[in-house]
Amino acid sequence: MPRSVPIPSYRLHKPSGQAVVTIRTATGERRDVYLGLYNSPESRAEYGRVVSEVASGAVVAGLVSRPLEPTVDQILLAFWRHAEQHYRRPDGTPTQEISEYRQAFRILQALYGHTLAKDFGPTALKAVRAEMVKKRWARTLVNRRIGRVRRAFKWAASEQLVPVSTHHALGTVGGLQRGRSESPEMEPIQPVEWEHVVATLPFLRPHVAAMIQVQWLTGMRPGEVCSIRPCDIDTSAAVWVYRPPYSKMSYQGRQRVIAIGPRAQAVLRAFAPKNPSDFYFSPVASVERFHAERVANRKTPKYASHMKRNATKRVREGERKPAARYTNKSYGYAIRRAVARANWARIEAAVELEFHIPEWAPNQLRHSHGTAVRHRYDLESAQAVLGHERMSTTEIYAEKNLSLALKVASEMG
Image (cartoon, rainbow, N blue to C red; front, side):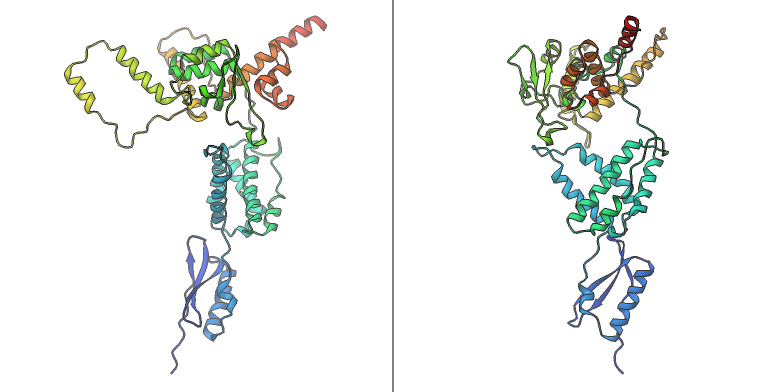
């Protein structure tokens, strides 16, 4: 009696989410055949066909050489490797785009990571968008992140990882329109009042307080004040010129130029590092300064036991060390924490509160500077200071001052 051919089992290929069956070729070699989405009717039907061919001994040669169709997870992984190389500054550090793509992909992976990339269509993209809306993300933020998802599939199509039709189909999904979705509108950034800044300064480390003053006086972006170094500043004239090595428009070949006047110069001089290539405002230097001030303000003398204990102190394993420079995130967090401490201190002191300090962020300092320049000079001057290419962008930053409207009305109306 001839030996029966064993029936290969229907299994899940976990990395791809596909169904797979392993067969033996005529030469005895084991080959995996991918059948489609696991537990789908199509993959079950394909499995039945493969088993029938194996049982009859008539396995088609092309059956075992079909390429594996990538899943959404695999497409995103391939794109991520591309993005890590593409979205980099000349010094090799990643740009902010990397973080934006990470946020855009999280919901997509959670919902459709195991779906075949070629099957990810407009309906699925709308489902991802609906989850973003549920998180109460602003409408413009949702549109930007959906755009990044489409960009990833466009890249995949260019690499022949998905059919071009898949990319074109995703392009039919329009963006959310103002007033026609449940997604909230992003509130326009308002200037911060100087009295609120002054009330916050005493609750900040000297380095962060100095960063705020420099930003207020120059209109720098938060990232520009975080990364300022002596080697990037031309100090040959009365007004210094700061040229950040990288800016948000560097990829277009535009050079950002920031003028630094005498008042901002005085602030920078107090924090000038010994090495011109070091940052003016460094968390490492801030911590060192803090400890030095504690030692200088110590009331009781250091005894031998204190010296011995300090000499044997070791940093706890895994303790986070201060970074070489502040980031937009750490800079903003320091300000938020200082505002909370300032308000709490006023409550504890039981003083007559003239005002509650509202929460404010570093980019509001830039708006305040733009508004002040426009109020004192004109829109063109504000455009030059803020480094905007278009007047319309400057108008967003430089809030029209009510006092100007009142003056015009009193003289001409």
